[in-house]
Every structure is written in structure tokens, then in C-alpha cells.
Length: 321
Length: 248
Image (tube, rainbow over all chains, first blue to last red; front, side, top):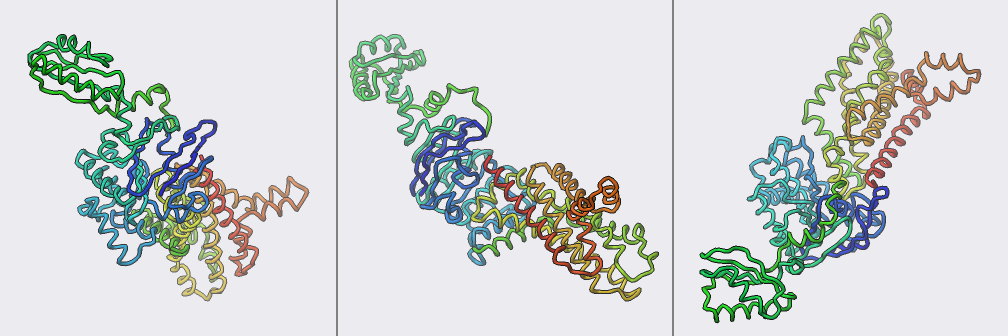
């Protein structure tokens, strides 16, 4: 549905987005990750046709966004960053206006407005003017606008920003559900969100794609991935460490907690492939030693760790959005 | 969805935006009060002792100088400040449709304010028998004048997200268009330059010279083209400014 090829945007001499390529098919939810100023919003603005790319191309449903913007835009719903809306309008008026611009008329328009009002829990504020609403309601109003025409493609720039935990949960559930039938791109800072919603994630840093894969694949890149955590009651951490050290394939061991009520040690294998064998060996060791094992599991890795190791070297790069 | 219905949708929203806030009512009241003041106090409506609206229309270029930018200043600067421009321009519409729709909305609003001055016409008709043709062309000229100023405000409001800056810029441009043909200025130019062509050329850019014809009851195509050209040029420039702003 969405095909991005070599997308580049230069502001003056600075490359905000530099040769970004990816594609999103129907049924996929793509998480767009990256530090502030990495080029996430700029990429989304180019995909939605708000700003023209310096070079490269974007096609949506086969329509080039520069050559043939109207049919491409018709297929898309867009929630811009900070969820802008016309402050002096009522929620109802605003949604009816956007529905009208999307070519919905008469009964179809009424039905579309009612549908998104229900989906985004806006019944209570329907006749209030938007400027009197709280941030969460404003955000959901703009979100409602983006799905009013039930688009095939949905571009969401930080859809859960500024929402409370319940609202975040609702919106995530909604995105996941819609992702079954649509192609969705959404950007976020919140890494758990990627794990709970996305079928695939892209990490973008300084304008370039630095990682692209399923959340599970990305997590495997973490140092932690494949490490075995062992928790034993009544044995000192040092003893576990010493006994585990001779096992074949152990790279290092780390004491997490030393406590007679349950010592925890994390054992890292030489390579992730050796991890299952290591787990087995540790299990046998515990049996031999008759340890009271409370916990023995293989770590999946953590997305925030991956994110940090990939994007950290340029902390001084805060700045333009 | 065709162009006309897109423009209609945008115009409708923009126009209802004026009436959703006190802006519209405040503006109309001030416009009518000032128009009345200029006509009867400064313009010497009664002293003229003639059944004409000359003293009413005479002041319109000055009246619009401040009031029209007040209406037009928020057109695009507000969209930029709130970020709604991003929303509007990623809808399946062309920038042109948005520009024309927003312009038409404020023009219609100004037309409404102008139409509400009809009691002046009634008064003069009651007191004497004015030439209704002249009154009609004067109204038409005044509307075109307002449209020209408005298109300029539209252009300056696209330049900045600050409404005050946009207001001041458009007042300056509009003031230039007045002064270029204002008798004191043309006389001054006459004195310092030997070439009469210069004065003519400068004055040709003035709204004053082109508005004069309408006030005399003549519908000169050149005058209409002049105002239409200002509107067309300013809106075209607006589209360029918006495009370059988006291009970064």
C-alpha cells in the first residue's frame, strides 16, 4: 500500500531525512521509532504530501504523492503531530467539515461522524467547542478526523502523546484492531507501544533507517537477548556463579541479587544460538546440585536497550523537528 | 468531489468561523459606525446639499485600509500557528481550492458588512433622487476595492504565523496603493519630476484612480481588470508563499 523509496529531505544543507526506503502492506502496523529530531515527522509529512521530498518517491496505493496527490491523499488518513484542529469549531462541526472535505455527503456523512464519535468516545463533548476541551479530547478529536473516511492507509504522528494511561490503552487497541485491515504507520517514543501494537518497527536516526524488523527481531539485537536468568533459594550468588562458570559457552555471569531468600544470577552465552543449550546445561546443573530453583528463563531482550545502543552516539543532535 | 464543492465547503467553514466568535459582530458594528462617522461628520453629507453618496464612498479606501487587514490577517497565519494548515493541505484538495475558498469567505463577509450600509442609500433616496446607477457602480467598486485589499492581506498572512505582523504588512502595502494616486502625492511627484509620464505610471498603480471611475458611475473595463489583477496576483503569490513554506 505504501512504498517509500530513497526518500530525502534537505533543509538548507542539513539532511533531515536521508535515503529512507521501506514499504508497508495492508494488515501491517509499522512503528516508527527514533529520538527527537531524527526525521520521523518530516518523513510522515512527505508521505502525506504536506511537504515535497527533495528527492526520492512515495507511492500510496500505486499513486505517486507528488505526481498524483489527490487520489493518494484520498486513500490516507493523517493525524499530524500535536493533533491540530480548528479551535473555534465544535467537535461535531469539525468532524462534519472533514467528512465533507473527504467527499462524504448526507446520510453517509452522518453515519461516518457517528461511527468515529463512538470509536473515539467523543459523545460527551460533541457540541463543545474544541478550544474548551482537555488535551486528551482534542487529541481524540483529531484522531477521529483521520479515520472518518475509513481509509486504507493511516499515518499517525504520535497518536498517544499526551493521553492518560487508559486513553493510551484504548487508542492502542483501536490501532491494533484497525491494523488487521489497513496499512498503518505510526510514530512513537514509547517502546512498549511498539511491542504491543506493531507488526514491524523501523528505527530512524539522523534521517536514516538504522533498524527494520519485527519487534521480536529487534529485541534479539539487544545484548540481553539469550541470557539466562536463574533464581535459586538458599544458595549464595557467588556459589551459583562459580558452579556455572565452567559450563561450555558461558561468556560472562552477572550477579543481579545476592540474598538467601533467593539469589539471582544472569548468565550470558557466547552467542545467541547457544542460548538454548546453555539453559539446558544450567537446568542439569541445578538438578545435580539439588538447588531449589525458583526461576529459570531465557531473556528476550529489551527494545529500549536496542534503541539506546543504536541511537545513542549522537546525544548532541537534539534540535530541529 | 469537484472543485466547486470543495471551495464551497471551505468557504462555509471559514465564514461560520467568523460568526462563531465575537469578531464578526465587533467588526460589523465598528465598520458601520466608522462609515457613518466619515460620511456624515468628516464627509459633510448634508453640507454638500446633493442627493449623492459621494461623501460615503469617498472614504472607503481609508476605511478599508485598517479594517480589511483586520479581517484578512488571520486567514493563513492562524492556520500556520495552529498547525491546521498541515491538516487542511493533506486533505484530498489542492492548495488553490483552499486559498480561493478562504478568500471568498472573507470577501463574502466584507460584502455582508458593506450591504448593511444600505440605510445610507435609503436615506439619500428619501431626501432626494440620487442616480441609482452611480450608487450601484460605487458599491461594486467598493466591493472590488475591499477584495483587492483582502487578497493582499491574504498574501501577507501567508508570510507569517504572527497576525500582528501580517496586519502591519498588509496595511503598508495597501497604504502604498492609496498614496500612489492620492492628490497630495501626485502633486509632489509632479513638482520633483519633469516627466509627466512618471506621475501617470505611479498613479496607475493606485486604487484611488481606479476607484474614482466607479464613483462617477462609469464601468470601465480597465478599472475592473485592475482590481481583478490585484486579486489574482495576490492569491497567486499566496500559493507560491505557501508552497515555498512547505518546501522548507
